[in-house]
Image (cartoon, rainbow, N blue to C red; front, side, top):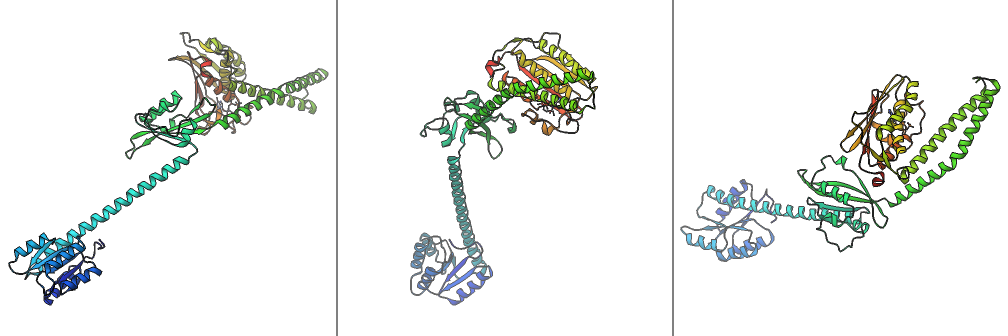
Length: 507
Ligand code: ADP
């Protein structure tokens, strides 16, 4: 239907000019556009070119019979509403006209109001029909938009280099892209519909996907990434997210898989390179250090005392200190390489954490006292459970944390080491009232070579490798480390070490 909602066109077909003119005046005032015809043939010719939504049709006209005109109009366009104008007491004619498809009738002579009512009724029907058609068109458009959107999304997914798999709330796979099938060596013909466990070989990851699917992860930031290796040696990194509905209800999970095999290979090559270089540098550096010490001793023996004005000696002293720093860094780098290769914790044995802590604290107390600091160790009355670990690894963890606490706490500060049993873990906290760490750096301090540089820490020497070593060791023992810190008030490092897990389990 072409009529807009505003102007509806009405054709008045009557041989009486007065009726035509009178009707046109009334209908024009009502806002309709009006056409006139004095005979049936003329009306049909007009309608063939110019469509009208409503036709007022006199049944008694010279020439073509009114009823035939009605039939022709209905055949031409069944949506045209024909209101027949009947003569006095011709109810039968009206009924007959309705049977042939007329919409309504009005008998002659009629009052303007009667005409208004009957035409308004027809106009309302025209408007409703137009509205319905527009709505249907809109719906059709939205549906085809949706369809196009769907196929666009599908194409994007098909061509994504990352593997994507989507599950419903039961953990059943509803969508997989070709990269996912390719990564996991699944046939392209494989149907969806089974549980995620039937497609992914990693149990831990399947558990995570099911948890996400059931909406158990409220804080999406906390959803851990998961790395796993396939039988063919391919390393994949998986990131999961819930799929949310309009009311933010969980509809399932989407898992994104990235192939990180090249990165892993490069990382291993880099570690091997660092290990090799460090190893090669250590011996000559140690020799230089020893020789510097030897020359310096000789100089002191000659003059009988250290003369601060002696420039040569000062240069040598500084060179000796620098080589000492380099040797310690190389030691750290070698430790890191060993941790990465899993060598350090390869031969775990039962260790009493209390003993290790006491030794480390006693050893470092000298350093703390030199800075006027109080280093305190609190061990519970009940003996701590025995851990299965490499004792050197535990020494390194506690030693690094306590050394940091001493280094990053001003003179006269207080360091408190507490060991306790926490469920199936041993928890050790090292708390200081030192400089603290700005929240922005908390995550970074575990990265290799990262050191916070500010007015307070600038002159403290270090390599930035202590905490990466601690983290590597704690990870290899299947443990967990976390930091809480307030700048200007102090820091607390907490280490949780599982009692049962052996290092081998977790390496
Ligand atoms: P290093 O001590 O050799 O610089 P680490 O890896 O042990 O390297 O520590 C990294 C950085 O973390 C340090 O440079 C320091 O800025 C910060 N840090 C570590 N422990 C503490 C602490 N107890 N208090 C304040 N800052 C700390």
